[in-house]
Length: 163
Image (cartoon, rainbow, N blue to C red; front, side, top):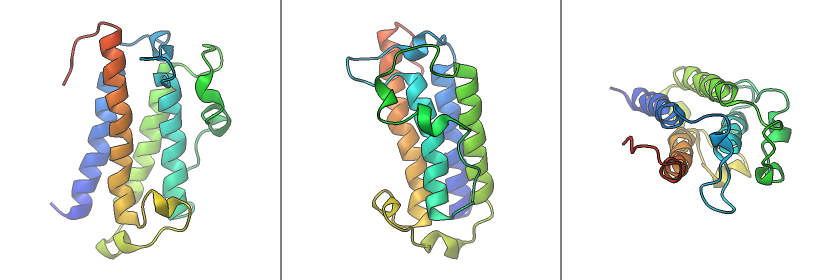
């Protein structure tokens, strides 16, 4: 397995874990906050969709499609406190868009050559990942951070431990 193939495998697995973790949650439960001040799962999934395209396109402009229309406005710091169920898309749409965003990232990653991993990323995204290779490692870490928050939500809701 090449380094790029290994990265692609990680990119595929973390989104599948998110789907398994949230699979038995209702649309209403997607808006539950695990603790006061925490972001609810609906906002976090939308945020992941927006972040995926923003970060990849910051590294290589036009590498993947932009986030769906309206997502940048719905999933920002100001809307993180919003609990209105009519404001956010339903779980199925959110997960479908996360899957599409990650699929585009995977398709792009599969076109890369080893030397492409060294390509530097301009500011301010370079603070998150200074080059393409580290960006491809950082994307699953970002999803994994949110996945941990979803596990806490599952416990609050009395759901069984999955992993």
